[in-house]
Image (cartoon, rainbow, N blue to C red; front, side, top):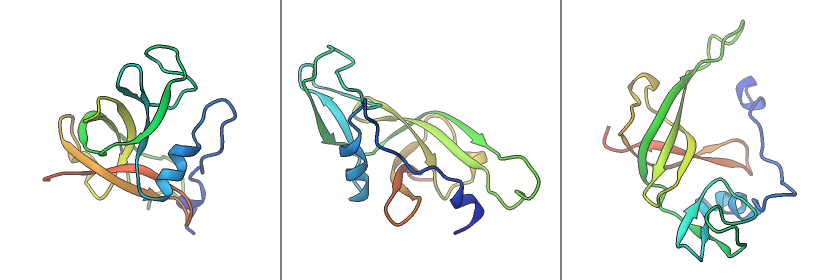
Length: 140
């Protein structure tokens, strides 16, 4: 395992917010978000109650992972001995389902990532058991 991989955080269970369904789905390559049954709207980040109504009338539903870049930045890690690290494109994606989610853009020059580009779900593997949602640019 490289130094860069060793420093990447692995998610931990949260006693206050039910995130198990989200992380279990990522192991299967599925992106699941909370869905408010009262309003018919998705929400992200996970919460114990609906952000729309305050009710607990929520369920987890799979989403497409397709969307548009809403905001983007390039993260560079300064410091000695880190010259080999590749800059990282971090984006906020507005999914087709109407929610925004943060993720990395994979396999694309960070300097060419731009607001308005179409993206689709990809996976950024942390180790044998954990992968984070990430994105690939579509058509470019």
